[in-house]
Length: 225
Image (cartoon, rainbow, N blue to C red; front, side, top):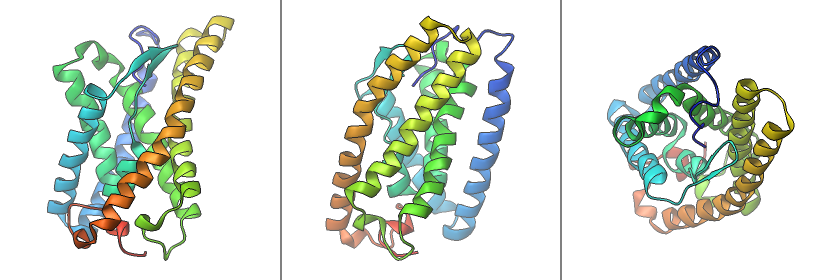
């Protein structure tokens, strides 16, 4: 979902700084709450894991330019379920930053847009999870329908933000709408695949029940809320 350079020019890019600051501020709030609940060491360990995974998602997994952006298999819902909201947010932000600093410096001017596009849908996913997952259900017991709702929420949020940046930067035209539609259509493949990945990873976690209580994983993975 990398926003293409030049899609939003210098006179408009200020908005990305505002949205990124808001998303970053909320991520810090989640991090503070997570550190208070599980300890700073647990938060740091989970954040290092998510950062490494996000970086590998961007650099190793297939990604293709489509329409106004790129299609990536980001696995935001998987990160949320296994590591928790705060580590997922930190990993998404830092993994994207590491990629930009060392492998794609041309993406750095778009960092505010990209990090907003990654984080705000994660926050929406977290809110939806509280509604579709019963309080007494550990994440390893999720069904396909619930995983699909979480994945759809996250990926639809990404498509929505990419569409916003494209139309904000280029205006509403036949060409811009067609590019957004092409990008959104390509992301349907991710929406179909990600719930299967979620269930596979959760199934592996369920089999490895000895990991219950580990500070490296989200507590809700095994324990009911």
